[in-house]
Image 1 (cartoon, rainbow, N blue to C red):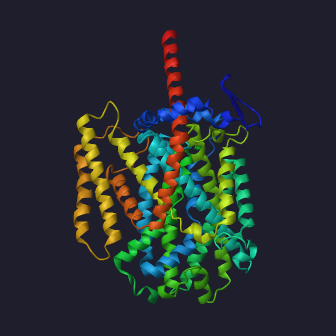
Image 2: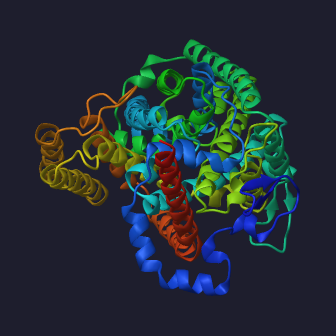
Length: 585
């Protein structure tokens, strides 16, 4: 990999790993330095919370710490298929049946529309950032620029956990569908360790093999991964088209006679769950650094993939509910059972192959995205800089890719799918909300441009938007049939957004591509993401709190001091450079 020689100021090639590869900063040179750094924690924390990065820092200074640049090999076509491959996994084949039977009935198609619109709002916010800050850091880089190091680190730590947990769940699901394809029980391909707890005794070697293959593909070439992804995704789209056409041949319109059996509340309950069928596009934003023309390719690629995914989901939902009465839909294998009931049992194999393909591309795009998140975090030294190295030959972050997939493989080998599936993506919704907030900050606050009066008005209106959104979510979670609370919280949200639009001038216009209807769309994205957070179970919030606490402890002990030293070192280097340039002039 590499070893950093501080005296020479360059990376030396070699296989050895030393302390300086992981903790090269001044605070960790000796125990005395470390103790002094810990004593200075309050001052350093204040500095990191209040100091924001800049677009130039993320795109030039931070990126330079990876030794080599990533290859710019991706077009809008690649990004579109990465988006489709990242989002359409096996969930569509399971979640649709579950929510149609338990919460929405045939109106599950409306749930997909609502979820798709909310996901599209987040796509818009991500797209503006990705165009203006085409960095591998994704949301971590965006939040560093707008909300500071501390919030960016807390957010990024949680999304990395979601990548690992989600990847482990998908890898174990891959084994289950593979077993189904061969007419076996999933545990037939697992090793039983009777001495372990029931939730951890079914060891999954196939999941390890699948992740190892994905790791090799992700490390070898981003462009190669892209080619495999869109070929596989085209096949997956073909499977979906087959399911829709074959299913509609067996359709019975009588199954739509009771369209909304669970009422409007059931539609929104299903929407909160089905939102997770859209998660994955955030990984595509981390590929902006490898995109040939970010200003053109990112908006086209991300928005087109989300429109195609939403259309596919809605058509699949309509097809399923026309094939069977919603009460008869199987919650575990809805399409396979529906085809068997219609006398086409052979079609379940096509569904299984489609699901396997979906899970493979989800794992691949996730591997590519999570490695780039970790690479950019390591560039700031919040994580060991050894993880930031980009391989000279492949142009990919080899170390980060291997470490992330090794962590995923360990969890996938031991942990049952039931445990993993309960860890819902609360972190992702949290980050989507922060990115929307970050976009409003980017548009309405610029140092030296925004007046004190406008800053105060912006803070007040933003606080009211957040407060009213939280109130709406809490009222939804606690009240089953009430409506009075909405007549208070929703108008406050509307008037707050209207006030922001009317009374606070925008401090910055997007350079290339911008979210339309600001502040309405980002504000609506904030409200929807908080609303969906209010629909998540208590166990997920406990997990979110515990992991966030662990991340904060790590930040106070290591990340804070390493990033503080790195920032000060970069600042001193800039001062010296400016002085030298002034002397020359």
